[in-house]
Amino acid sequence: MKISVVTPCYNEEDNVAECYAIVRAIFDEHLPGYEREHIFCDNASTDATGEILRRLAAEDPSVKVIVNARNFGPLRNTYNGVMATSGDAVLIFLPADLQDPPELLPEFVRLWEQGYEIVYGIRATRDESWSMRTLRQVYYRALTRFSEFDIPPGVGDFQLVDRRVVDSMRRIDDTYPFMRMMTFECGGRAVGVPYRWRARKRGLSKNRLSALFDQGMNGITSFTTAPLRIGLFAGFVLAGLSVLYSIINLLVGLLFYQRLAEPGIFTLIVALFFFGGVQLFFMGLIGEYVLAIYARVRQKPVVFERERLNFGEAAAAAGGPKTDQPASPGSEP
Image 1 (tube, one colour):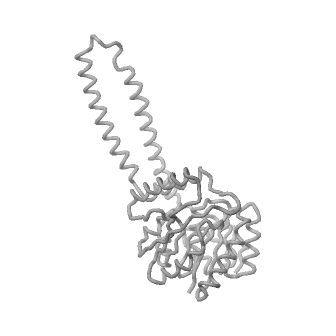
Image 2: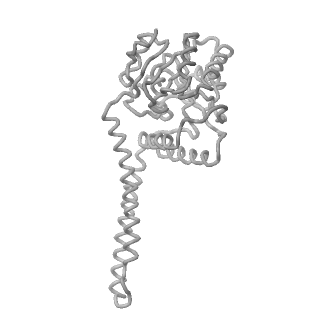
Image 3: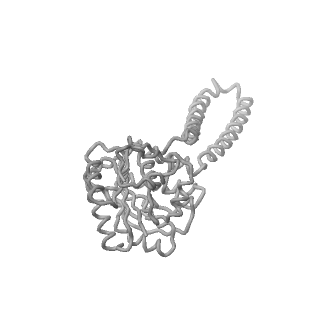
């Protein structure tokens, strides 16, 4: 049987070799009965990451490399790698910087052997600043609270899933996949394993705040319609309050018309700015959903690949209709 491990990377020349060595040692020591498939997805790195991966692939046929034509972001890059796997179980995300501990892989596999189709890591503690930790907790609690299915708190992309789940994910037609929730959307027996999310040892995170915001909005628009429902409810409430205020203002004007000078001017200014801000906010929210629909309608591939290393022709074609086929002559069997 085969276990696949997917590692997305972008400018990780300081980490990819260590990541490979640790995963190989874990398989040799703790999972000797399993065939190893370690797929590195290079998101068009500009440093020496590509050269290191080429060397590893030349030395070890269990290492497979996908090189993208440009940087497509971490979500698309990782999903494309998962779709290229051939293992009976797939660790859908192991970061090159090892912030999620690969030492948990043997325990994940044991639970998978017991019949669990989704074995997910729970980030019980985080080695990061208080502000970022709090912001993440608030976001994911809100997302899991309003999602259309049950999502455990603290779950990330660090998950080992059965082949059936991967095949089910392939059937979801989404050009901007949010995998940490997509696995639960497919369903199956699930169990969580708590761990400590570690700080990076070397290098800096390539995820900018703008990218994090984009990924966060993608999760909201993909798995919950609650913001639109909240907007609809808020609209009814504000409309009702406006009518009530108009009636009160009319009565006050009729009763005390002679005593008031320039009645309602301040109220009009406040109301104008308040309702203008509310309208702009919800127009922007609706715009996010429209953009998600637009991306789906365009039917673009998740990524465009420049080449693949150590993939056979049959494996290369297994990526499905959602990924651009690696037709580059630089690909090797």
